[in-house]
Image 1 (cartoon, protein in one colour):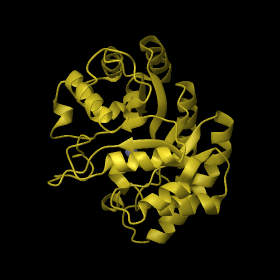
Image 2: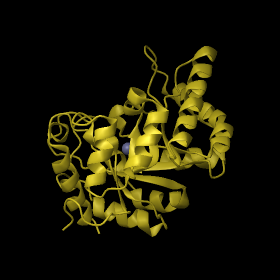
Image 3: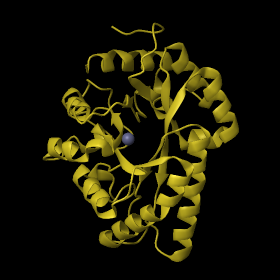
Image 4: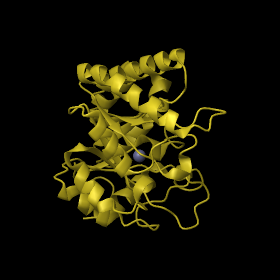
Length: 280
Ligand code: ZN
């Protein structure tokens, strides 16, 4: 069983958001480091608190590697001005990701604009703007990891909900290595044919996020469970992801306003390590 301290586990990444309310930017890295967790995904709101320069120094000082920046995108607002603003924003975030050494920027499409019911138009705008970001991603050396989210958050976070849709988009766009997919078990565990879509995604999978779906969930966004506490076959999904040749870490990403965010961060990290060790 993995506990506090001990040897570093290169196969585990704990997202900064998992320690959202108990730690500031520096404290989250220090907590990970003293528990021998050497990678994280930097949460954009946390980065904004301290700025890119300080973040890069703290990552270097603690020896924690940022595998990605979460999250960019949000590309669905209508109009030319909104389009320019969204693209400019994302270019800045791509530069920030590069500055902290992150290989990917997790990218959400965004939801339906306020007052709109035109889902197809929102999808079309998001797809076009994603294409518009590709040259900057290439230049920055940061890969865009498109993340479909659970359909319950279609209205406000992501107008694509399945890995099949993400695969279709990537087929259509026909980009190179600068565009791939972030697969989150919490978002797609319910998807029919998931195994076939994981195989189809293959080397396009850039990040594997993991949490659990609580049978009595109180909030589909902010009440994620610790792997092992819910209904998701994380071990099975992880096995399918590894079968594609995926060489990255398991990234545990837990938004948990009523439970894990309230706990001692060392306890949270120790629990994540134990549960991930059980995933094989
Ligand atoms: Zn995720």
